[in-house]
Length: 129
Image 1 (cartoon, rainbow, N blue to C red):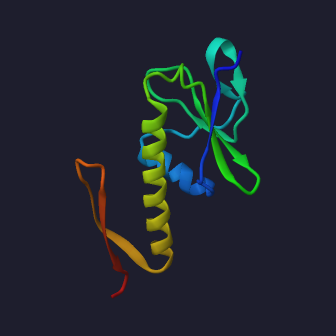
Image 2: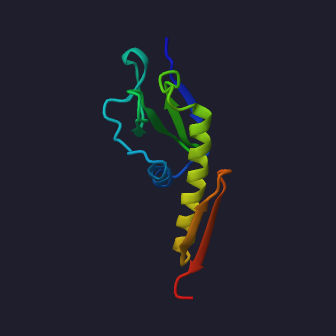
Image 3: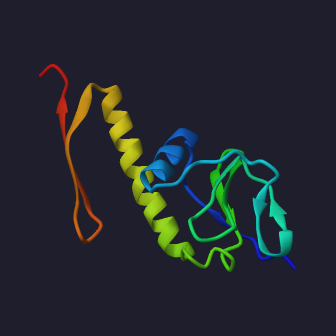
């Protein structure tokens, strides 16, 4: 019996996902021999992360034309609730994507503050202005 859960996302850019994971403090790992789950079960992924305090991993699988699916044995990743991980990943993805897009338009981050509510305030300025 598989314990793996697949969560479809709207995250489409691998570089932005990797940046979001880095902001969350994860080292992005190559797929190696798959995403590890309960009793040695494995799932395929393009890349993965391993939360501290567990031997289980969270993988990222590209789905043709639909972005990435997150795959993990969430029962084994008990140090990190699925909903909390997905919510933070989505927030960080939005931040990294927005800052990256604005940097391409000539802006740079002047200030970035994370409030207790989880809201992130970013002040940007056009370079050379």
